[in-house]
Image (cartoon, rainbow, N blue to C red):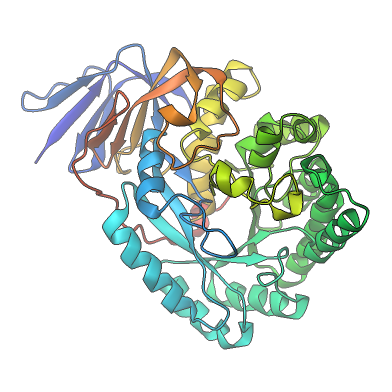
Length: 461
């Protein structure tokens, strides 16, 4: 039985910041207390460092495999970058073709991940295309450990008609699963885009006008109305607006089973950033669009008061060549951006260092909240006896600058290029094994494993 003691750091969870040692045995935390002593244990001294739970990113695309472009991170490169960013578990997406079965799309991703995953993983299963033919697969997938089903209210070819959406909500509710939603009014966004193009307003500066806050507000309102009737557990992805925060907060107050996330880009940038440098504007083309500084402030408050349970990334990077293949026409820019490796330094520097989040609040939205939302807790998302020994050792004082060439995501297009931050992950531990240390990959091969999930009532937010 292998024993390793992490000694001398400050342990940060959603509950407290404590000084204690951590004993890891065979991939699991078996003791947390001061001055642990075992003669046969390997010692790792992390004096002066913070110890966070390994990050849980519940929204990644490795890759987004549709349309004219395929995003640039594979499961191998993306999960490796995640490890460098202190992330030890991701939930990616199994996205079927319109006629493909849900199980078939999942099988493809499972084969890929089994060979390539540097961190632990699971999958949300997208429902699209011929919806009635796929509903009967849902109960079996929930029982197999895949209880979350992604639906789109945006994007032609992906969004569901309301009748299909209602049937998905009902079927998933009866199966004991949950539905996670891209809540944006797609037809309205398409109409506004067409109108802007007709008026000759094609430049990147007009992109926020193609997907204004009302697109998200209307979709969230409609979705929560449906939930109120059906009672299904919901999660709303990448919340970007104050209006959506207000709706989510009100629904949670009345007891609707609902969680939601935002992303670092909505916390750091504003719609003003589409107006200047074209390279930055192209990097920031994503959906929903990035909103105003007022919306940004309300999102931070939503993290602080628990309205939002997670910061995810919607990691979906493209190259500069892909981003500018259509020139300065926003309608031709592929939507998506890199983030799986930069979530930790951005959230720490602009959250904790800026006093917008406490350390315990940070630990919650970084790891525990997302793990709870999607049935990974308490195996993942916390530092506790019995939990997986997933840890990130973090130097809160190291000053460095974010540059694409120094990171490990497979892209030369980084929205955060040249931004200085204080605080850096220096070691990532996956189930008791050091996989990244001092910005070097230590593990000799991918060791990520599938984590079956269950929506246990006692851990639901």
